[in-house]
Length: 256
Image (cartoon, rainbow, N blue to C red; front, side):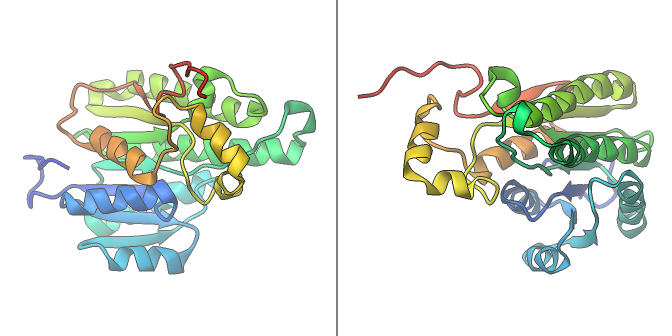
């Protein structure tokens, strides 16, 4: 993360919600290496503490990202702890692979809360905390919004809402110097997808859908998140950056 001349000590404060996930951990490592002061948020205090132990400057915050009021309190705590908030990322998500007619009302409510409400809650809370000095917010979408994949109805609908949120919030808060963007990964090998990638047949079929002929890693997506949070990207807002091995835009050729 580039040094921002507006800070007094050369560091920026970045809040990572969903810090202990596969993409979250990689993002934390990237920002820590770049010298950021970090606020790590998630539901598991023990995992947060383990992650923070490897960082130079990090606080931990236990929160349910689906709870709008709790996320507001989280941001207040971060500002109270570090004195400011310059960047925030919501790396919370879930993966439900069911057709619409097999998706229960409970499934639908959970998918929306985990993927869309959590993103909205962070934007709602982070913007006032960034005050008049600007900042950057990064949310998480999915390549499935763009390409249309079978059995992704609920998750694609929720993440489609995230993309709409990105564009609207970028328009609303741009005059305050607050940039709002998102990353849209393809299939990333992670805890969320371990059952899928553990099946050799499914893993091979998924790999072949990506033009670059491999599944993604946490580091692949984290580099994009860190890039979007960097104040050097001061003219990038309202964008959804596909980090997907080509899945969202490129039709692959049949392979022998």
